[in-house]
Length: 218
Image (cartoon, rainbow, N blue to C red; front, side, top):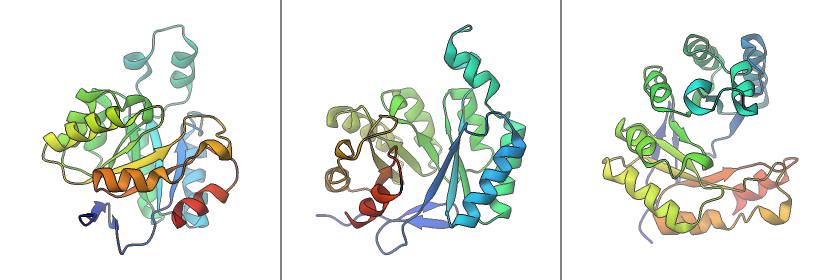
């Protein structure tokens, strides 16, 4: 098997010979409160996480008005100015900040904040124009694979590589909430690594910490 490349992640690196990067998922669990988000970042840093990930989605660009998703994201998203403050707060506490951008306008704004990477969620893995634009920044691109088969992952990776982006990472992911242990398929991490020759990790939706410990050992 060809060597797996080492890819940049803020001031850190991901790949062979480097420590496992632990990412604390904050998403929109701050429920729109910048104060709560700041506290979650502090607790993530205190617990030893290397990075925090938010979710930045413009509800008007992504969801129809009146839907539950539109209501949820309208009440639980941070503006780009607030996100910038949270990125600064994360760096102050020694953790790398990045986020999942859900639309083209948001992606462009997030790029201006110098994130550690751009993140493509499982649900956006077939959004090839968004992958094209994210990969086109030449910033590290991390993509989750939940709900997608190898054909879809092939296409997403090919799109990223077509933009001359050599800093790509993948996450094995099971899109169930919570995901039962028998559904996690941790050995797929090896399958993805061998098939795409990129660093691969685990996006955990299970309860507890056992799964992430086993994922590191795979």
